[in-house]
Image 1 (tube, rainbow, N blue to C red):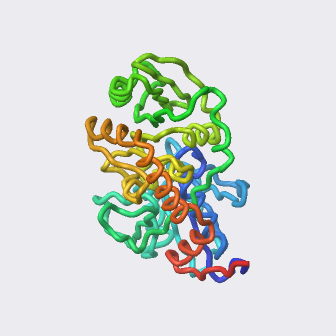
Image 2: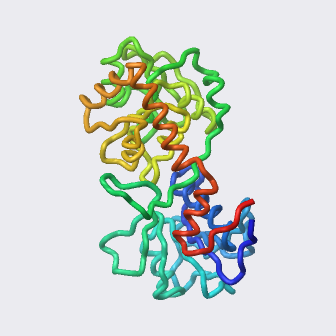
Length: 335
């Protein structure tokens, strides 16, 4: 592999870098890793100014911090020095505070954003990076992503469950943790399929429902615990897919588990890729689950979904090349 050049660099301004549980942080870190294959990467975060803070492959530079962990006032912010003229700028959340900082320190520069900007913000030279296709669009500028999984998770079921083939639901409930009563969608599922186990992941726990009765709760300590639950489900129903790439849906497809997702969500392209179905209400949700009890249907979706996810989200090299093209940097030579 060619070493990153010194005549250009990539600067990330990230408010979510230190929130590893969020999809935005996951995407930002993955993008930074890919960008580092073609140019040096600098990461600026809203934290106390001082010596660089080591964080794995990157050193974090504190820009200073505003109220509630936000970016500081532009005039008070620390800006990295000695950046090459050819520096690509990427912002994870283009909120007013970071845009003001850029207006002061990088006026008129093209800025790439991971999350879309507020349409009410004044026009600026911003380019929204896209990681998954939009419904009804060929999306030639989609970057994709590398979404890793551990294939060994498919060899052993979760230790807390003595069965497989359940309906796995990723909850959309927000607020204080409380597994009972179930959310309305889960109540419909367990009422419609009273002889099937419905496993609901919520607040780092997996609650098992059968016939509208709560049968037990097990902890979901790690990502591997979640992968085991996903790999041994009949179908994964994500009621609130992530807004950028719907990460858990991609992971499910890479394990060969079909998905059922809201029609108006970032996960729709993954279902449309052949590995699942979409729904817009209770009737479509219940009909989709019933459809997936047909073994031939499930087997077909499992195969097509795995192929789609591995092609678009399972190739590290393709992701690095795609990022290099999107950012206008040279594509590295691979050994």
